[in-house]
Image (cartoon, rainbow, N blue to C red; front, side):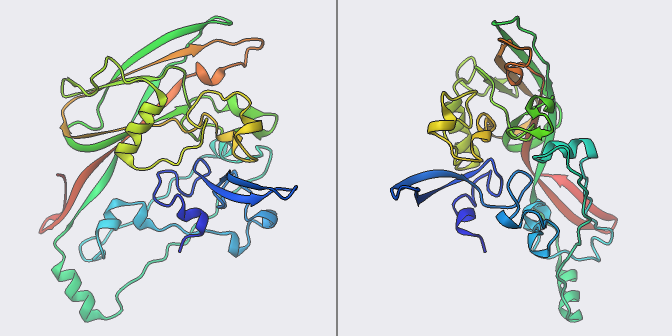
Length: 342
């Protein structure tokens, strides 16, 4: 079951994440209705208070959470059961961020944090006859797999009160010889200190996809330009392409822009302003076996104004995290498990 807030964005890529949002109507202090007020998702996470007034008791059982691994691993989502005679060494590996990177995921960097070891719970077939029949009839499974590549977009050093055009091209390797249905590019900033004030993280630290000025892209798939223009330009045009490929994006005004004039006073409510400029993703369909994928990306880097720290988000180095969806198949054989791309 999902709460009403979750249901409003349950099928969005940013569901259950503060970068997603919901709207609500309410009565203000003077008795007048305020329609479609932007609210952040009412879920417990590092940036929201944990269940409101109960925030100080984070280790209470009711403040915990559970993760359905079928929604994480395409293999488990596609396989209705997992026969242990076929997968005797199946295991789930969790990688935790180190202590320094954990500080990028919280509001107060001066706090003391620890990692709780989770408990793995699974259902099993208690009837041995049914279990034996299921295991003997298992023929394997085809599933959707996530492939990843990371590109390094170097920092720029424009002069004070000046801008500088910057273009970089890359040939990816992770998607070669695989049928890639669609691709997602996340602009992860390399310097999380840009969003630190004292001991607090401002905005979303380096956890979002940071908007860049005049961000353009061209993809060349197997020697063919993927977009008809020299470069695909315009934030809302890219947003439309993102929707076509990955589904509805419940994006609030300003979340994919570098800045919004007077956004705090006229657009956002509390806990929503810090998502401005943090939801600028690029996504598009490919639907081909990739032999070569070349990406060309351009931006206008912005120099500082009055202080050295001005506009750091608009000129720093970026980790361009690229995620592609492919298809795999697991087939049991007499010699073990055969895993192949399809």
